[in-house]
Length: 210
Image (cartoon, rainbow, N blue to C red; front, side, top):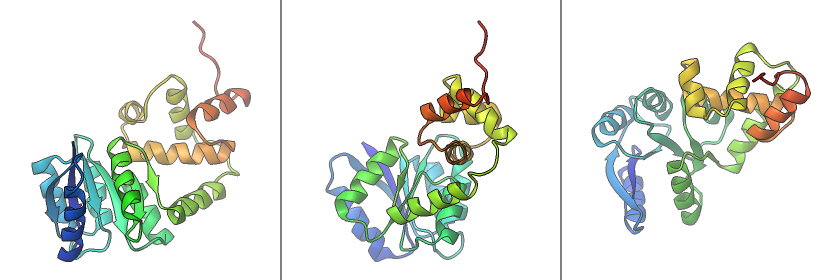
């Protein structure tokens, strides 16, 4: 059962989303919030698995709320659901710690799949959001790996998960994901395994002696 908290400043939107998820046997809507501050309070009280987060709300907005939630223990995952797909919205939300970014015009089945994937910790991005992130990665691809990126890659090469890497470097999982995206772009690869292989090929990583 996936426990879901719905955050949107429009009651009609919250009602519609609640009704949709209530019809699915693997979802439980544990609460609703009309702004970011209320969302943070409810997450601490209700401990949902996924927060479906609007961005533009009065008071504390979705990005600020996502940033606060990323700092909480317990690992709640945030899926942004908004009408905005510009870089001024997408990049801050992902950098704040959102697991995924979807637009409100997404088909019902796509939204259901996205929330299930978010609950599993998988990144879900609307095509327009993915294109923006890829563009950002490509723009940084020319430079060498930074010292922190090398540290991330060394831990990944040793088998560390994103969460373990974040704990060892005293950063958030979102920061680790951001570093990995930059690493993929700079090395011209698409996943963790390929990044490690390419780093060894380039001499950026040296096999440990046993």
